[in-house]
Image (cartoon, rainbow, N blue to C red; front, side, top):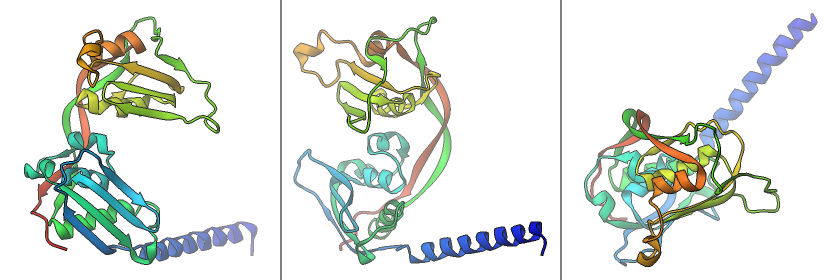
Length: 260
């Protein structure tokens, strides 16, 4: 057998084996939680939890159905109000607790969202789909023509193996180490009220700190700028009004909770 023919046969065998392996993995992946409890939360508390837990579990505490839908479709919780649209009003008013366990106590990587989606379809008769819509957005841009940045935006030299890199957000503050502009754009979006798209052209990671009036005490807020001004003055960035395609989850219908 010629060398070229042997190589072709080997490549075909590799593809066939890989395809069989992937089919086997998908066949083994659970399509439903083995045990699941969904209950109304009437506590009135502000505390909230949402995400996977040890032992193949999914836990949500004091969350809205819109937040659960966002998780099920892979949307970060702070952006749920912007990217999960339509649906009845109670999607944002009623709160729920969820305790669910996967078959065998194990959830394969990337399967938590689909399992939660199946649970919502069962207990809330959820019908939702993704589509792309033209919507108002903001473009994150460098503010100054000379490209000079503000004192709150510094090229990072952080060693992320020893330092805690990433962005921390709270009302009135965004701060972190080794943050990319795309990550910053996503984090500032909930405070700006629109999807924010990075158009700065800045490819390196930065150490960031920006503070603005929202969330500060009245005495402190009186001397602090609003978000848009803070971005200009402290970071040398701006949010430019625009329109663009945005991937959203459209809630077609949902019904009140079906008892466990």
